[in-house]
Length: 243
View (tube, rainbow, N blue to C red):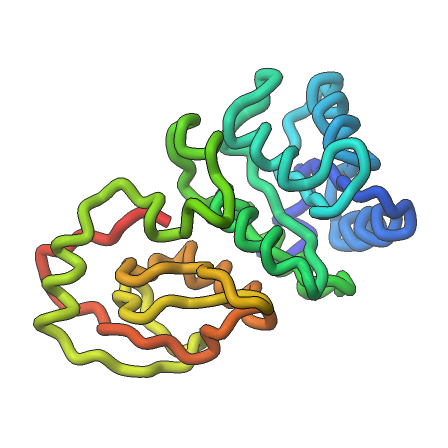
């Protein structure tokens, strides 16, 4: 199935306070075969557009830094179901260099994918197709309300006990592997940091699900995880943790 076929019946909401960026993204979507795209200049307009629309948006594409209501507030509103928003609505976040803290918070709020500006056609459509095919699992409403980059990390918000993961680390062989070569469900044994000054992005130990690995690859320009310290998956009783 080609790109045009995958996007033929899909509708998108593009949220950015720069008209040029919105126009560019809408053009990319239409050229790729999308059925429709609605524009909003900030989070408040986006929520209004969702409420007024007769159609369900397949993906929300949002910038982070915007006046009135920024992308993080919009993402949190979606994940908490504020204003009756559909909580599992896929959200693709646009970000720029120097926004490490915002990126870390968007990851914790379960953004489905990231595109680093400047926005390129191929990269954008690739991320959109991935999101349409496989969304990130979301958690309870209470999990998203108190999130801040100083109190929560990707692994500390996982509700499962890490005991089985620790046992796997103790019984396995730790390897340093390039991010692109890390196998799904490998166990991360060393923290991943982001930004300058450094902040914690992913705290070990955690099982690197497909969803986590995809987003780490989206953000490879931001963090120190070009090579990860992991224990590779093997047949065991340790079940993969959710993304």
